[in-house]
Image (cartoon, rainbow, N blue to C red):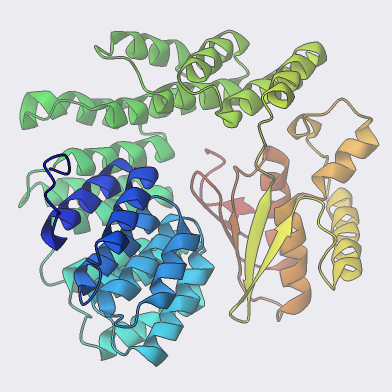
Length: 483
């Protein structure tokens, strides 16, 4: 078109920008932006400006999206929505909430897209108090019965560890669709309520034929609850009863289901039966199970498959290194860590967020940046002494470094979730529930310690790690030690 000397109009540019969004083609998007400026196409074309903002957000270039947004003189709800959802997708949910508050002041009323994005931000950072307040705003704005918003509320409450609120929202929805049912099934799965997830799945089948997304949700719920036979039955029924051939995501759920339950050989055999090349997610599910059951042979196979497909996936190196560490194969540990250093890959550090009086506080492993650091570590020492009197012995296999036992124990007590728990104990009234979001899987020793702290302090501790929810109360966890 350009070779023929024809200048593209705004409609053509919108189509090209849409393609850039779908392909995450940032450089092409920048070139289109330059073309728009050179040909003065942006003047009086709000649709084009909004599309450019959305393109930059979708291509993970938030700095350029913000710059364009700030320069835009005719911001509408679409402009705000693009930037708010962009921050959520790019992992900055705190900024998306701040932006929403700014929108409320500068622009006015949000639409359902805004509400869904903000609820997604609350879910991501487990901002329950903000979410509850926001739910009230939703009802005042007249979106209380909106199916799209209701589904987002189910997701938000479940990811904040309040499954009862998810159930209430679901029950009050007048018109449930496929996504709503799937969200409720997923909610039960996150909280380890596999039987409830199955019951909801079977209830849904009375009025709606399940699609691929619903099958993913229910298989994942079976995996979290250890319902192996039920998961197998549903998996095999997909093609036979519903003409829905399993996708890679369903195989990934099945590998996770079998692997968690200890059927590693069966999981490996299933991978070999997949007609197309298994994705890295499928091998990652097997690798995770190998860590649980200390199966080095299959772990090496899984890790090497992942590295072949994605050489820069640091998590596979770390998982393999940790399995070697559990087996005290320190030469292999150093070999894998040397590979990580040579490739200049960065391990994601342990990080936990805790909400106290509607304010979020972040703690890293070994963090000493908080103003109350002295009190936090003093509280941890006191807790450690009390737990030892109660018979607690640290699980040093949760430390993947070849150091002295005393140092190992010290490293365990500096894990980010323990710092967050101590901070919350210091700064809240006795009996107040503690809510924590952790970016990695909680280690075995921290899981044990948190159970004991919940009994010792009489606190409910609701912790969401990268895999699921853990509701600690009176010395036990909702996961039944199956995670």
